[in-house]
Length: 146
Image (tube, rainbow, N blue to C red; front, side, top):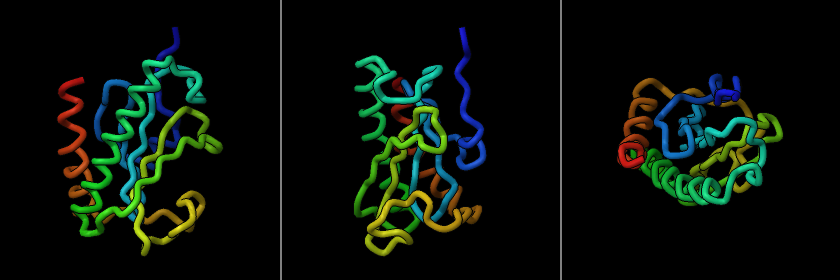
């Protein structure tokens, strides 16, 4: 039996937050947007149809939870989220994953999608710490229950 592992792209572009019931939750390290990536721990999953019905339901619940965490990140950094975007693309990184992105009318790509827009902007160390703390405050409670 194969063992679950993260695609290399996630290791380069995100920081670990917490293991949820189904997914690894990771903070995308592009400070232009509060952004969490959820990666279901299912070997070989590339499409949502590759998940069992129960796992699809769990993924949706974890996406809602990640949305609350993304809102917390935005608030912690003084840029409250006005709109949540949820995307399951996989065109570049085929391992099944969900992006939960906080958007504002004054952000760098509004109203267009965030993908392929300019260069990623790394977090300043203090902002990264605040973003992680805010996300973990929301996600940590769920991880302890899971």
